[in-house]
Image (cartoon, rainbow, N blue to C red; front, side):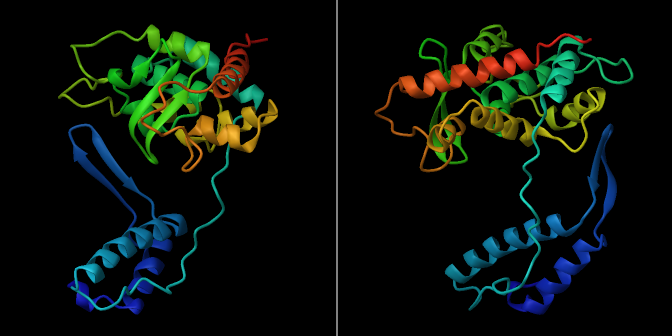
Length: 272
């Protein structure tokens, strides 16, 4: 539809159709690929948010007079604050160590390392998946992220996370810590592999972001302040972002060490 033809009523119909599943599809995308679209209220809200951004741009470019998405009600749902219990972390650790799924099939080693790092650092999935060697500073015990969700960001690392990174080999002189098998980009299979990891560990309703929430939850259990936890997670306005800051301060390093050690101990619990 031309942008000028989109009205609030159009947007409401769009949200309703996606919510009830009219856009659901299971499409074969390539030889071994599938795109599974389920729809639902949460998806409808995210699509409406994206459309609103597009229409805001259209207003700025004087293509349309007003944003038709503004004022249209949409369901955003409850925040996804799922985090892993100690027992779930122990089961997850055993699966990562064993390296096989529920059917005994091998799990990609790169995905296993990424999952472990997500849990030990509290980083966003994209920050670890797209991590470059130029952003890794083992000497100063930190990551110097060039393009995180909140811009440049400095993240303190605990000893166990540093050990995982130091053991990751350079592959084909790629700038990425986790290079893809084809092309020059980073590895892209974590989202698929983590489903197999969680299923093998008997963990339901938990994806990559649950690992970040778990890190934050453990940090809170350890007694760190909200400001410190925000600094560890790189939240906007709270992370260390100045280009003049060359290393994380001692408080963040100490907190990162405490949280990382606690999580490392939790995922190392042997089976009974």
